[in-house]
Structures are given as C-alpha cells and as structure tokens.
Length: 325
Length: 261
Image (cartoon, rainbow over all chains, first blue to last red; front, side, top):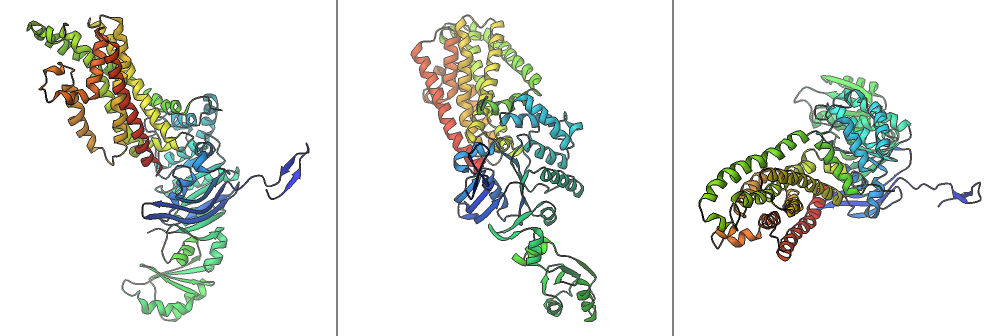
C-alpha cells in the first residue's frame, strides 16, 4: 500500500486501496511454436477506457481471452481485480462483463430469455434479473424486440444485445473484443453512443479494435499492438503528437506514375513521406503549404487531400504497414 | 453466496430452450414407442409367437414382453447419442453458447456436467413415457419394471458421455452421420434388442457384449421381466457407470482443449 490515513473509527484506511483493475507484466501466450502475445506490460485503472489497437493477428484477441480468464497465460504475471486468473477464474469472471468478437447468443431463445439465462449463469436471483433485464433492454434499444427470437435480429441489434447481456451482473470491468467489426457505419455509431454512455457512468472499458476511429472515439488511453508486442502507449492525442505530424497530404497519381523517382521528389517537401500501393502520404505540419510545393514542382496528382493526422498514421509510422489490409 | 450449483445453472439453459420445443418432443416420445410396439411387438410378435419354439429362445415370454424393455433401452441410447453430437458442435462452433457460459463464473466442467445432466433428464423423461406406453400395451407385468427407467437413463449416459467428448474434438459435423450410421444403428440392431445375442454367430457375440446397449438391454429386460439377479445387474450397471466416468474424464479434456486454449 502506498499510503494510509486514519478512518473515522480509528482504523487505518488505505488511500489507494484499489490496485489496477488489470495488471500485466511480461504476459506471453504461445500456441505450440507460434507466439501470439510476446511479453506485454499493461495497467488499467478504475474508470478508464483502455484500448488495444492493432491489425488482425496482432495478438489482441489472445490478450483479451487471457484477461477474460478463459485462456491461461503461458508466461508472465496477470492480475485482474487484484486476483490471479489461474486460481480465481470463476471469482474474477463473476465481476467481469465480456463482449466476445464472435456472437455467442442462444439463437433458440428470445432476446429477453438470452438476458435472463445469462444472469442465471451468474446465479443472480430471478427477480433481480427481471428488473435489470428491463433496464438493459431499454439501454440496448431492444425493448420492442424483447420477445422476438434472436436469429432474425440485425448484426447491430445482436451486438447491442451481447453488450446488454455482458452488463447483467453489473461488471466492474467490461471487455469488448472488436465490438463493431462487421457492422455498417450507422450501427457502429449507435454502438459507440451506448459505449460512451457506459464510460460516462464510470464503467471501466477495455476494448480491442483495428479501427483507428473507434480507438479515437472511445479510448482515454491505448496501446498500439503489432506482432504480439506493444509498439507504443498513450492517449490518442499524445500518440499522434509523438509519432506523427499535425497534418497529412494524401496524393493520388495516375496509374503507373507513382514510382520511386516521384516519391524521392516529394520527400523533401515534408518531414516524412510514406508510399502506399494507391497513394503517397506526405507528413507535414502545414498541409496547404506542402500541397502548393507539390504543384510548384509541376506534379499533377489526380486527387489530393489535406487532413489531420490520425492513429492510422501513428500505426503506419511505427510499423510501416496500415491497420486494415 | 452460491444458491444454485453451477452445473444446474448450466442445465437451466437447456430447459429454457426446451420450452420452445417441447410440443414436438412430447408427441414424438409417445408416438415412437407406440408405433414400434404396435408394428414389431404386436404385429411381428404374433408371427414369432406362433412359430412354436420362439418362446423358449426368448426366455419363456411372449415376443412383445421380450422386445419392449429392449426397445426402451435402445431408444434411450439412440436419443442420448444424438443429443451428444450436433448440440455439442453447436455449443462449440455454431451458436457458441458454451463460450458464453465460460465467460461467466461457470467452468468448463460445469458446461459439460450441465449438458450431460440435460441429456440424462431428457432420456429419463422419455423412458418414463416409454414405460407408460409399454404398460398400455400390456407389456409390463411387475413393479420392478419401474427400475428400467433409471437403468435406461444410465445406458443413455454411457453412450452420451464418450460421444460428447468425441464431438468436442471435431472440426465439422460430417463424422456424425458416419457415427450414427456405422456405430449407433448397427448397435441398435445387433445388441439383443430384437433377438437374443445367443442367436448371433459365436464370433460376433463378444462384440455385442462390449456395447453399452447390450448391457442396457439386458439390465432393462431383467428388471422389466422381474427376473433380475443382484450380481449380474450390478455388473451391467458398473460397466455402464464406468463408461460414463471415462466419458466425463475424456470430455473434460476435450472440452477444455476446445474452449480454453
């Protein structure tokens, strides 16, 4: 304990009694010869919204399954809510909410029954579940579909139901693995709104995503993961400031014209230049000035765009690859 | 404070799903024994009993009385085997409901125990209905026949537990058709359900003795005909119980490997 003060009854009350909700040191997950998670250190504190950002195969889901106390760690230290998953799995899981990447709803049951039975897994009394289910149906905007079977629901509705279900035990820590993958843009925005509300209510969120806009929208702090390791850590703004320029000029050239000669011509115009298969990115603090300089060189891109730097650019800088392939 | 043991919480999910499907299941559980006993017990039975020597081969009873408890066991084993195939694959791969369960305080062993409890419950109720139909056909002559219901349930579980364990090792459902066609159905036909195993060629008899169904049929028939002796009956029950135990141990391993790797 870091410090203590004396409580009203004279007992010492630790000031910082709550350890991090999630604490990992040197966490490793191997499947045979393949190392999915290669020694990561993470701390998440109460009330935070924390993200693992990285492309598919970066080790995010394997990390989440260890945090969810489903898959045992191969090496390293992992403490969830101050407990060891290897010893206290069921006790930890009783206080977690899990939104898995792939739906695991019972298609033979109705929406309401899915909430109900999930509450029963936690051994919640039926009366308590019934009350919470009504509130959660409301929260997930599914009240009107409460008695319909799950199968015909849209992808967005199924995701919202999965989130509602994960909240039935009023978890201290909500884990979301790729919460909006496969959803259309409108459904994603509805979901983000719901998650934002949870965050406002003080629920601690830990999520994985390979969408940089999702990470920017939801995360107070995140780690960029690549090939099982953490490449960088910080708030979205910090990461952009540290690893990218203020602005980016995206240039598309006619097919066949984008080559190394062109790229070397562009390079002096910005702090950094990145060549992608279909466009060239010019990193600079003043996009308009850089674009003028491109035109002054006598180059004529088919299209050009000046925009703010994003986490996508951070990832590109750190790994030389893009997040979504 | 735990009020409901975890395996029973896992069982609740099956009960809840069954609320949407009970009508069809109820009709089938009455219709199947009725049709089988009418066609084979009564219809075929008349031919068999008229042949003169049959009653002696069957142990001094009419064909209907011989067949009915055998069918009871066979129906239990067949139903249990089916419940341990596609539903296991669904829990792991299709609807992934097993994964939902282990995200909660439930453990893999609870998931397995819950599913096997559900199979046991279904088979038990189905066997009880079967016994009532048997009685209506006049094929029950002793109160001891009531014990054939738990006996058939045990036989069902002795099949369901290893099959559930095996199902959890599969990537697709193709082997299920082969399992039902080449294992379950031949066993159904040649394990003493329709005729005594003593009528099989000598080399095939030991194979029949190894099947869980032969032990189930023998046990159920001895109980239904009120001719069960303690030691042989315990022997059959122990063999079936050992298969359940082996199946549960194997299943704990295969379920864990599949769900928590």
